[in-house]
Image 1 (cartoon, helix red, strand yellow):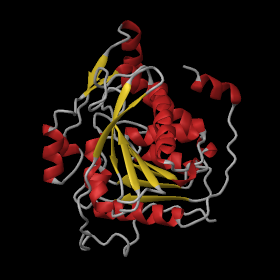
Image 2 (cartoon, helix red, strand yellow):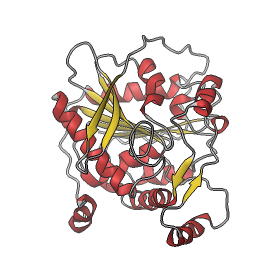
Image 3 (cartoon, one colour):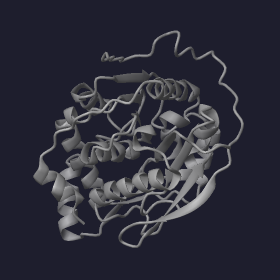
Image 4 (cartoon, helix red, strand yellow):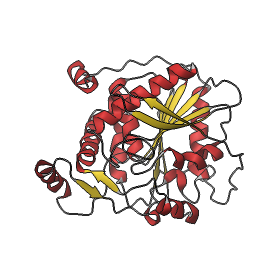
Length: 325
């Protein structure tokens, strides 16, 4: 196994004049799944015509929901794979105040319940599951892989929101003070479609989507920051083969934190690709066929190999604290 670190696209792989492939539209089936605390989370499943032996679980970015993955599902072309995408607690059609959760830890526990239940219900071994996340979803996916050490096949991260650009001096200390004064405080995101993508259709659907709300709780925002710090510091514990796809003109999150995270990864197989000129919505940009093709290539390569047992060493006291209700 080799470690590949790519900080810029290869000319042949990312020829912007290439024509995006055309794939048939896949229809989502809609379900709900009960969590241990009684919450029913909404999710979508794109299932192949025959029983699936391989699956990809999708983690959406902050403010969004599972329906925003439809373009990637249609364009990635892995028609014999099952795809599952949940609406995280407080997002989309899942219950809860929009943008709120009882901390990032609760969202990560939800992720573990969701993936393990999907595996059991559909008879898919954990080693035959890959996870793909974008932005906040990429951080949650990384935290889940780090904290629970499930033996999944591969991890694909799109522009992980390890450091959000807040554009306000001393924003984090100010938010910590605000949370002490108002524990249920929330802030409104500055992000609009024009900061996410140059694709006019994707931009318009983002701005007009009634299931997308700009509010996010201060507790979740601070938890995201603290979780990202923890992950960067202990990224060597993540040994799952990982592909990081990041946007080169991102005004929402900082690429410097992504690079630090990638450099500390403990995976024998890890790759990073940067797409110059891309805004934050890596999988929804105008030339999204480029990162989607990279994700497809990486997934097929990993599923074409025999799964490898990987040992992950964690601090047991920290692990117990994470899994407790």
